[in-house]
Image 1 (spheres, rainbow, N blue to C red):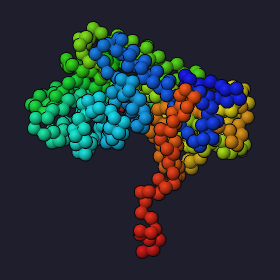
Image 2 (spheres, rainbow, N blue to C red):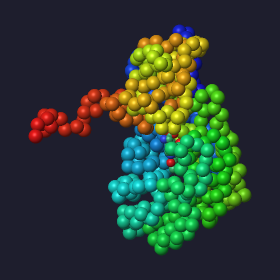
Image 3 (cartoon, rainbow, N blue to C red):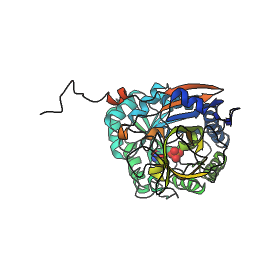
Image 4 (cartoon, protein in one colour):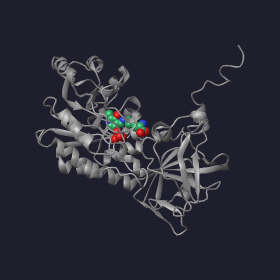
Length: 420
Ligand code: LLP
């Protein structure tokens, strides 16, 4: 993160707080967010787009880090919020996000989700097909209206991992170009539903700007709507050798494509998730064991239960040790987790300076798609999340406890499962 440094003990600091001290106070695995860096990044997206295209809105794609603290910070920095279902909607409501700044996504929205969206006055629902329209119609009372965007498949295969691509013609999200007219006609007969524009999203961790420009050109060629939402997807740097476009380069490309094609009073929306939060967050783990077999292994106290990314997308990271962040690496090892899967790998061929039991391993740029994908595999407990800034730490999400793990289970006292 931006606000990282080294203190007089030689320890890594974030937001003026020693990572070692955070690990001692809050335990590991621990998600640490640099609050000032996060706010600065949010502002650069919101103000950067507004400077280039005044009638614009930046939605935080909250699936990338859906916690109450981040919803509240995003809203306070002028972002609106993209929620993809009941749980994210509930968290956004809890954070105090006004309904008119919430956009609801989902390719399989339930009656319950649509009902809560309508009841909370969600400003815009992104429609994935005709079933959504029927559900909305049923949920809306006579005289009530709901703005919608229609999600269309842009037919762009951005160069990204297969699990992150959403824009190709076989995508499960959205409708095809030739279905737009029919759906627009269907909606035009319905006084409760107002189709204001189109939505596309071409994928995630995209490391060039041209696919975004192409998405803008394609979607703006389809009719003349007051609103175009061109989704998220801007990639970020995970290792020192990555070269993602900057926010400015990305916004320049999107807006350059929109200029000339869209009237200036058209509303332009983007939905950055990863590029909003990824680089503001790091995760701290403790080394549990090291060994040399056919290979050298360093095992830390997390795994694919709290860090699914490497297993899912093959994303690479450059780990550092919190107590000696600048020491020269002398060891090449498989940095692995504690889940019972061979694919439970953090870093293939990690370079570390003499890693030992008790060392704190820090993975940078884990602010997006890390905490949100945590699970209880092997009975793992979800890590805590802290925010740091100005030398202070604030707990944002508590660590899951064994009681939390047991809470949903009907235990022996209630039913004896051991006999029939
Ligand atoms: N809008 C829509 C409709 C989306 O589906 C997504 C991400 C975004 C915006 C935000 O995209 P971003 O700016 O974060 O790239 N699990 C994968 C990433 C999945 C992305 C899901 N959709 C991973 O860990 O890489």
